[in-house]
Amino acid sequence: MSLISVNNLTKQFQRPIRQEGFTGAVKDLFHRQYEYKTAVNDISFQINQGEIVGYLGPNGAGKSTTIKMMVGILVPTAGSVTVNELIPYKNRKIHAKNIGVVFGQRTQLWWDIPVTESLLLMKYMYKIPNDQYRKNIELFSDILDLHEFKNTAVRQLSLGQRMRADLCAALLHDPKILFLDEPTIGLDVVVKEKIREFIKEINKVRQTTVVLTTHDMDDVEKLCSRVIVIDHGQIMYDGNISHLKDKYGSDEIITIEPEHNHDLISLRDKLLSLNVMDTKIKDLKLQITYNKGDINSMQILSKIMSESSIIDFTIQPCEIDEVIRRMYTENSLKGKLKI
Ligand SMILES: Nc1ncnc2c1ncn2[C@@H]1O[C@H](COP(=O)(O)OP(=O)(O)OP(=O)(O)O)[C@@H](O)[C@H]1O
Image 1 (cartoon, rainbow, N blue to C red):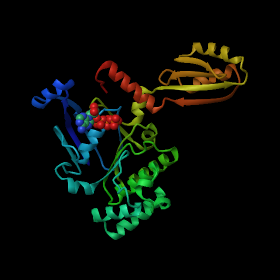
Image 2: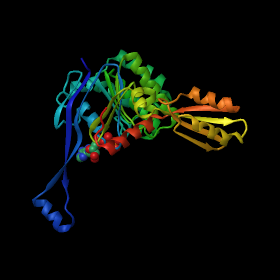
Image 3: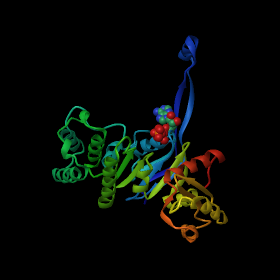
Image 4: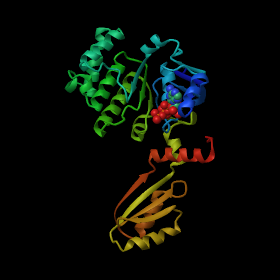
């Protein structure tokens, strides 16, 4: 049975429409009008234990709203969500023991007290046994390098330090599921890498299920075996990344640096006989864009090497953010996408 089960889930928000001017404000007092925004629209998916799932979508797609329903902060308008056989908003106390939550923009730690004391408070709140607490603090402090700032008040931490402390706090009680909303937002590359390593390790060693929203495509490529893509509250794609790349990112670019600059133009002309998409000369290099379904890199390289000697070449696959961008573009051009 799935650990997380979302079925025909919908969330609609009601927002007051404010009329302009003084008379509008008076009218509002007596007859307030509302508009309705469907943030999540009839979505369904299942997540099994041990999966790391990227929940992706553009701004305003409905990601945080879905996470908030899975966490139990929001009550669905229609449909259902169960997490570890519990209905989150109805069983908030027991549910809290099964989940860890990190919202990148906010902290669950106490602002004015040192990190260690904040973590101790979490121990008492979750009634974590001494042994488990000590073991986890040791392990997490090592992987996340908490030692250097453990005695600093949370409000004095850098964003990266605070995020590491928040991750530790979210996992102290050994939750089965970790919900991460933009865990690497605003962090430098070194801290991002540390956090990704930590998430991977926890998932591997403890089989912790991870649901992650992010706009950082490196997070997705390095962490997620599966992605769910949502747009305008509806699911556009649910599957693995390689399938998504095959569908929207089957082009690659080979960049060639010939030994002699004067070969560039004649080489480009020779390539016209091959089934490539585009050729471009840039910074004394030849860039060839091709579709992997039409021709492969070896065919292109052998043609080039038979015509000229080269100093260097690189093959650049289509990046995942470009893949997702194309998916959104196709969706907005065609209306709803069929996968
Ligand atoms: N409490 C609320 N009241 C009214 N509308 C809301 C509320 N929360 C979210 N919305 C609206 O619902 C839609 C989805 O918002 P949500 O925060 O889930 O998007 P998101 O995919 O997480 O976006 P982002 O990547 O920008 O965080 C947006 O149009 C947003 O304005």
